[in-house]
Image: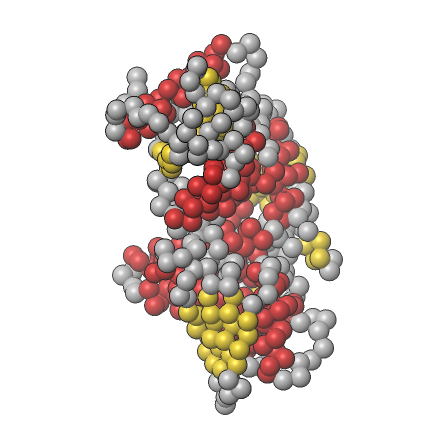
Length: 165
Length: 145
Length: 171
């Protein structure tokens, strides 16, 4: 696939690699008898690092953002579409630094379940993406905490809480 | 026309999925025993057919038919085997079985990290999809004649 | 740990880097490193995706396999078509040469990881995928741009055909 003169790897690779990275992290830490929290933290950290890199690429030809909301809109549209091939379905904010991004068919969950089955496994498939968002925002100059919530797969909500200095 | 049942086997003979729709008859043996006999029969049939064939067979056998039912067979190069039993009025369904593999098995088992590839499929989503797929086939009919 | 030299990154590259970085030393210079095994697990699944999307049938011989890997698989997943070359006289061994390796394009190995076989993931993927189509194949990297070579070269050696085993309990 040629895009902007840069070769892009097929998206299925991202999916399979994401799958494998999760399985590796959980397997390698299981041996050390660690809790799941450590694994998700690690995945989140990896996502952060990737998010930082990706956002640089995605914002290359984009003019500076007006404000925080403008940044969030970018994350919901271009950033999301660049990675998950669709945009976030709904963005809400309390105008006090909390944003909720709702994706009704989150790409990394759509193959897993349409309902309650495998609910308990959902967190590990969201941790990396939480990190992605946090990493992207961080490189755009915004510190945040990103968490995810699922009540019925494959829909999920990411909550972004801006951290003001 | 109608569909009786459908089996998905992996390369080691494990029955990954079994579904039945308008099946009217049982073999009188346990399902587990039936899976084993079915796989054994396919295996023998396949290897003997290979021996009989005048030239190298690429696709193996496609179907066999009795006076009462027809067994359709599709095998991928990776050894996934999809078997569908229908009544004898149903024609060649190779493309149908191929579609079941590529749009359902691959999408909802291979691409589901929580499904192991060598154990019976637990995913409800897969089961829903395959059920809807079979019920949506032009030759599927629930009417019992 | 691993730096990217440019911001032109595709999804695979940055995802691979922290995966490497987090596993740290355990992955270094180890022939049977996790990355190989990790690649193997990807291969086992990606072959099904590949067959579903391309409708490629069973290959007649190793030469056909080489062609499919290069022209279909690499092309589909990484957007490049490696050159199939350096066949052994017996036809059981060949090389895939990549002028540019999409996995490593903007990667530079840090000083404390100079021996890291960064692209060995590809070896595992190929090994896993081929095993699923009944071919036991040894895959190794013989040239690596990250190690200062001019190109990346993977060497594939056919070991044996994996015969389908009789179902359990049959004679």
